Amino acid sequence: MNYVVLLFFVSALCALSQGTVTDTKPGVSTAGPPTETLRYSVNWPSGLSLGEATLSSSASEAVYTLSFALDASIPGLVIQERASAKATPNYCSLELQKSFVRGNRKANETTTFDLEARKVTRKTKDGGSSEVSTSQCARDAITYLYFLRRELAAGRLPLDQKVYYGHGYDVHVQFAGVQKVPLESELVEAERVLLTIKGASSENTAEILFAKDPKRTPLIIRVPFVLGKFSMELQR
Image 1 (cartoon, one colour):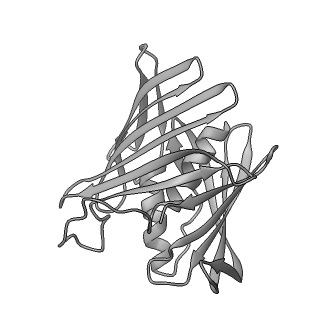
Image 2 (tube, helix red, strand yellow):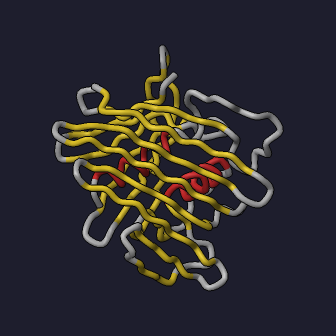
């Protein structure tokens, strides 16, 4: 898996429960995602920012709409990622549209989920197409992240499953104990969760520390790369 895809998984997790919230509408059921826009930064191991991201969501009775955007840069490479998903109230995916710019590389594709036929179809802008069989309730990456938030808040860990973001990735969540972490001017207890994401020829594990509050607010996220551990930090 390239590092941009892993950044997507963990940075979106970072924004699930807390951040700079705008356009929040009252009266949205807590069973589904709130109508909100969350912003956060993505940082180098040194602490310097390499970019920022936005995670947005809204819900109707029948369909949840979830969106993600990432703008970042590393020496010699500009990265832009855009993705928008539609899902059922049970967090089963219906459609994922995504596009990206990674230096000179550009792509635009749509993935559709046929829940009855248990098939996932991926089509690219240049005419490419592929189809794979999947579970009755398959999930794209954005939908999975909101599903994970709900499960953690209910005191559960999701079963291992295939998650789609272009290709399919095997995702495993593991509880790794409780530890104290600094939050503003005090130490607070946090639940340590490991999220392992495995592709056809790669495997990476992110470390997420969730506050022991009803929403399981993510406090710290660390992602190991060759250059060191990148971190995801919420904008206050």
